Length: 192
View 1 (cartoon, rainbow, N blue to C red):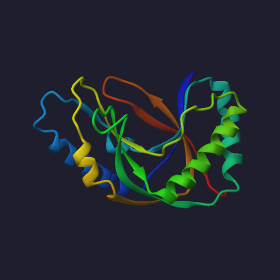
View 2 (spheres, helix red, strand yellow):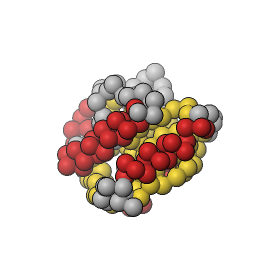
View 3 (cartoon, rainbow, N blue to C red):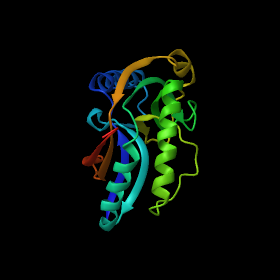
View 4 (cartoon, rainbow, N blue to C red):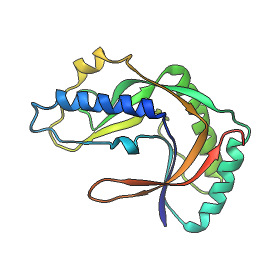
């Protein structure tokens, strides 16, 4: 069994801007000793399109074939990382994230729907929740939750830059006390 997910990588300058923003948030929280956030390591920043979870090794070749066929008719596209959000809310956040502009979100949602459809045929459970394309920047681990309401309103439209998406990536995730480690299993070039 391997813990797998399908994701898109963002351009290095976008990841760098997101890392700078993480530092700004850390400074904002410096006076809050009771708040603990596990920040996403910049090298692990990505856009998860579908979490597959524990997957039998025997399924991996079929998964590769499905992803390869899915991306063949697609063309590379551009997305803009923009804005900030909090799950479930800015008042009591558990997850701090950056989203995407409306046009990017629409394109990403179409790709995610195609993934859901094709992967369901392989026996992967379809996600019930509406897809909200986002990049996780941090997870609030303390009981005490900072109120980001005012801050969120100030930076709602901040752009972190554009990324040219040219492939879909199958990752393996290994969890440890230091945090997750992601390994690329395969890349599937759009239009190849």
